[in-house]
Image (cartoon, rainbow, N blue to C red):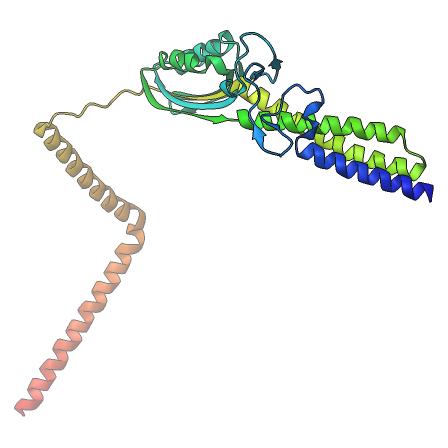
Length: 307
């Protein structure tokens, strides 16, 4: 009976605590980020006092009650991406210079690839550069090109998502602390197992949120830049009209055709002559004999008609 009563008390306490935490009741516990609004007894939302702003940096650090601290909304976390297509005089030289630009800006090379098209080499370089150096790196890369054939950039503001994750993390950590206290007060093994199961779920969600926050910090701290290098190819110049050259080419073509015909005749005589000549003689004799027979038959017909 006491065990049931204790379990019921624990379940009720846990439900009340989770409900209060979800509604912002956990804001009273120490946290790296304050709630965006404080709620009065009636449940209406009031803005936080202006004298105590909380700033969130791109690295995920917070500063509360500090002089000259910027308001939280003024510090942004932007994930930047860029892609450029550059026409260069020397691909190898441009690739080396672009690598130096990435390293000197505090960044790094993610990957590079080169390939040949005939006698010309092309390349693609993917680099990570500090976000605050993104525009400066773009300007330096443009200076390497004879012509900028393409230049695109995009950004994703994840500041609000990061702040929301930080608030959720605060509430979950407070909930986990409360569950640990309840775990200490567990009366039996079954009650302890149930409390520990709930604690594991909350800790798992905490780790997921921390992982997402770390990803956002890393991605907003370094921007991705993809650079495609294309070598300059000489522009072919159209040739002037040359009638004499056209006549010469036509004569050469006619001479070539005549030579081909003569060569074909020689092949026929030499290769097939031993077979074709006797065959032609036999055919000629047959035709001659048929003509004589036809002439003799015609003569007999005429004589018979005269009689």
